Length: 322
Ligand SMILES: NC(=O)c1ccc[n+]([C@@H]2O[C@H](COP(=O)([O-])OP(=O)(O)OC[C@H]3O[C@@H](n4cnc5c(N)ncnc54)[C@H](OP(=O)(O)O)[C@@H]3O)[C@@H](O)[C@H]2O)c1
Image (cartoon, rainbow, N blue to C red; front, side, top):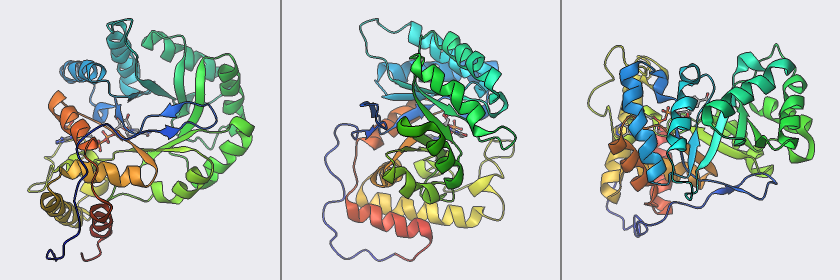
């Protein structure tokens, strides 16, 4: 790696979290970063016991956006969040909240009961953002969008979004919803995994749709984990995506090169991973397995790397020489 040239300051002073993105035409702001409560699909009682304090810490630290879904732990994620929200000081502003309708509940008769179940578990009369979790080609979009629009009219849903929608699916959903349209598409997107984020990014920008980036830390790899060894067998990420056997050597090589850049810039690697997304108009939705991880990630989000650092990270992550 070349290092000699002076490239200007590597980081702006640590400070506030980045400002958010306009939420469609609602007049509201969608926070720039949030915490997701999927917990890598781990829902045994000991895993729940580890997640509970993370949720409470997120509320105490004013993490501005929390994301859940009816399928996460069969409703347990929403329930744990609802329990924690119930303990909040009544004078305190609660975070922006999103949840998701299961792709198995997209029939017209299923939409309302699903949302009401979510609201019951959360202990709230309405939710800020409600997403269709995955498209389901067996159910015509209009069948799902009509009841969702009615729930939005009733004030039960602040805004409607989608998740894991391709460009074609997003265009169709946006057109079907009319002038208030789809306001968010939640897809996997990080420096090392761009296959689903990049094709929809320009359309989202042009239509003021927030691109929510899940797995922004590549499940820990872009927080500096697994730079020396692969996840152990039985770990939820082992053998999948970037960790899949044939991809792993190159994933790890690029992650190590990104870590070297982070060290040179005197930044946490996560700051580069998060701000690379934010600079592309995407809102990272992180996961955290402990309070320490959550704290480290939120601190990283407060450190904005210089443009040149993000540009070098982009090239390294694409596999170009730097
Ligand atoms: N719409 C969808 O279909 C969909 C799909 C996936 C995810 N999501 C959403 O996106 C959220 C985040 O996804 P994700 O969990 O894949 O995101 P991620 O931020 O890329 O990965 C989070 C995981 O990385 C590890 N990690 C985080 N910070 C760390 C640190 N400082 N040091 C070491 N390891 C660290 C932790 O693993 P350990 O817990 O093992 O320590 C943590 O659980 C989910 O909770 C969910 O809300 C949505």
